[in-house]
Image: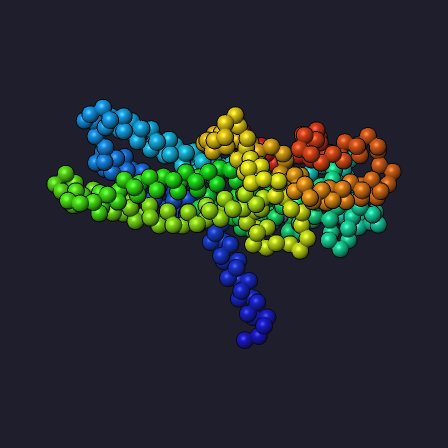
Length: 357
Ligand SMILES: [Zn+2]
Ligand SMILES: [Zn+2]
């Protein structure tokens, strides 16, 4: 078979895979929701009543503690899962009325000889942010933004396309996605610690007359489902905890470019706060609450040792943008987070679908 045909077959398989991924999203979401709901139903109707009692002061205290933790974990799972699904990951969109966009498009489309476009890497610097060009979308994209071939659009700080949420995990929904994994993993641990004594405890309690055949079947299915989730989500969530702690996305970890800035801040705590947010208490970032990440998904803080990336951009802007307005330039040079909101008139994003507080 010729090389051409093999390529054609691979490409066709890839296209079918993407189509399957796109249209089977609701099936994956439905399956995950059903499994979680089945385990929750079994826990609250069979496992929890069988492992708690209201006889005695300590038992009553234990009952309400157990119930509070169970309800909180269940809420955390559903809240974060729903938010991960309905919150758009964020899409790059330059404001077409800004003067910067006119400069950009004239450079990209007219391909003139202005110095601020780097012909080799096809990048352009606006407001100290190095934008590259997505040929599939025919639009510019900021750092850490990637084109998702399943969604067929560019995603801000894209992590990966997740069939289990039926979309991409990116800048605006990554926290919900990670917390969903975390709450789910802790919850299945909780279910297993309650169900395993029922299954393997002395006296064969599960096989007593108290339980029907359906009860036993539900407990066994829920325990198996919980164990598989414990292993799968534990390893996947652990990988994401490592990524957050080291300031990376999945794409950056799996396909590291030859030269890219290091986004890991000076401590693991700082890296987690960038993703989970910083609240009043140490555990605030772990609470199932509405959250909009700071920044715009376009300009990111760098490792202190990597500030030369910023300085290079600043120098290129200073030296190579000819005849630009001084006031406008000074407004674009500052790369810290505070300046980003001030530049919102220059760069805007499709955030209208993001559910804010
Ligand atoms: Zn694209
Ligand atoms: Zn996608």
